[in-house]
Structure formats: structure tokens, C-alpha cells
Image (cartoon, rainbow, N blue to C red; front, side, top):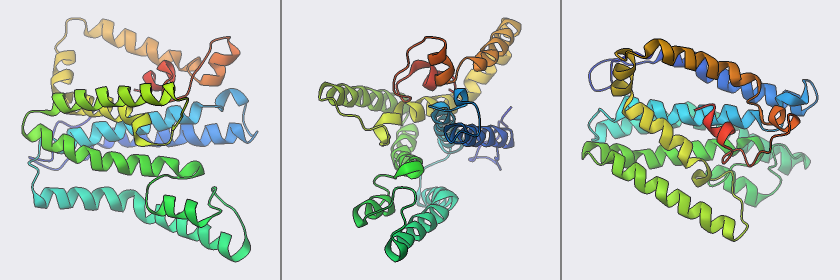
Length: 259
């Protein structure tokens, strides 16, 4: 269980969630291995994006839990920017530049970076190619979260989350009317970040309610049952069983189960 200590009061490293992040990364590795033929195909074809969903949801949870109780001023904002950027961007930029240099020097294409345009898209964090697609999406949410943080200072967090969710549904509707698909942009995954943020923002209230609930035993039993459903949660397993699936970021099970 995450510690109840907040950034605004004392040190907070939610070490219990480190393993969950590692598990999310392991899901992605297993899925890519299955897609490459090293593991049964039932573990590929969309399972990796369930791991990505878990990671995106965790990002939303942790940022809301750690920062929304802390005043948003220049010092806290600068700490936030440094902490977020140093966590992912140095290695990301190294990979992007290195692969582009290989393309220029040896005409070798890695990670889909085979033109100046694609390199610029990656370097500008506009859109990541191949397996790099998750990093720009994550960084876009880092920027959006500042708005949620500011809203929480003025007690408008729920209103802004609702407005963002409504805006995302509108974008989905417009895109699908025009038969457009952009699964690697922020608005395709914004609902995952927002759901995680809601859980992080209200975590202590939810946790206290669950801990004091008279139905605690029943809720625990339901939780264990849900965990056991992991056997049939992977998209390819569901397809093999005759169930239909849609794009991972819209699939109720692919999104809902990790969250």
C-alpha cells in the first residue's frame, strides 16, 4: 500500500508501486517477444499495449497523488520539470540521435527513423516512431498535468478533468466520422491518464473508505477474482475464444483491466 505521506509534508517515494511499474515493462517485453515468435502468440498482438495502459495510468496516479497537495509556485514547478525530464528524456534523445546518425552514415533504419522529417518529429517530441511512440505521449501529459495541478489549487480539479474528458470524446467522434486514426497521440490515451489522476487525487479518501468498509472482505474476494481474470484478459486470447476486440486505447478490457 502506498505511503500516505505527501510531497507537501514530507518525503514520499511510493516504493510499493516500483514493482508494478516493472511488471508493466515486463508485459511489454513479453508481448514483443511473442510478436517476434519467441513466445506463444497468445501473449502478443496487443498485450504490450495493456502494459502501456498500466504505465500511463500509474503516471497519472503518481503525479496527482504527489503534486496536487503541493502549492504550485516557481520552485515546485521547476522541481517538477527537472524530475520529469531527467527521468526519460536523456536516454530518449540519445536513442533518437544515435539511430538518425546510423541512418545518415550507413543508410541503416532502426526504430523507423529513416528521414529528416521523422527525426524532427521524434526530436521535437511531436510524435514518436515505432516503439518510441510512448515517450512523446507521456511528455505531452506532463505538460497537461500542470493545468490539472493549477486547477487543484483553486478546487477546480474535477471540473477540468470533466472538461478534458468531454473534449477528448468530441475529438474521438470527429476523427471517427472522418475515418481517421491517431493511436499514438495524447488524445488517444488521455482518458487513461485522467483516470489515473482521479485515483491519485482522491486516493486517501478512497483508501480510507475501503479500509473502513463493512464489505471489506467481499471487496477483497472480488479483487482476487478480477486478478484471476488475467488468464483471459490478453487481446489475442480473447480473439482465440471468439470475442471481438477494437483498438487497444478504446477496447474496454485492454484499457479497463489494467486500470
